[in-house]
Length: 217
Image (cartoon, rainbow, N blue to C red; front, side):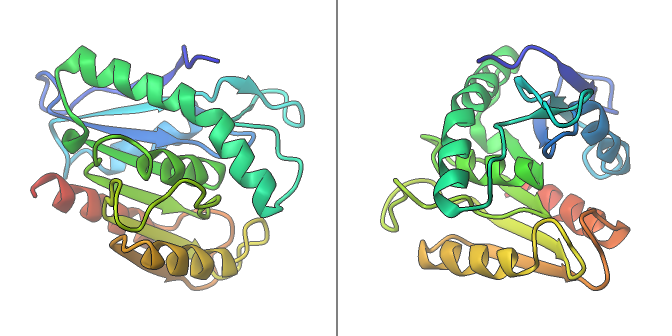
């Protein structure tokens, strides 16, 4: 499958992009929904191109939305298999966009929400070269198969999760943090009190600042 459409926001500076922020939406959502985060980040990232592709599959449960893979359950094996099946499309999209703008992984940050967080983590931890940063909202690490503590990319990661999330419980954040630390990945977490399966303004600001700082390294 191939990613062929979605939403984007050009750099505020008006010139050619020097950075790319890739926004990966959740199950049943779309790039059109996810791109709404971008205007709130533009002031801090004026030379950044924001890309929010639609996942390649239409979501059968939600007619107007998309899915990275069909959710048959939250069993770890099912999540790992689903993320692995969707990863090649995202990797190909990244390769295409980096080549198009003459940029490298050091100029790229991955931002995910829910199922998009699973994809951002899966892809970033398996790319041949390290991306600048990963921010995951309301999601989780979908398996560690093929990850090596001694080798492989270890980008800085920020995980943000609401305590009142009824879809992906807050326990997923703690599990993901533990697994990432076991792999010697630099992970930062923020727990949003009373927030459900969404992102509040504090979480958005933390994500923006995390990416802006990563791009200056």
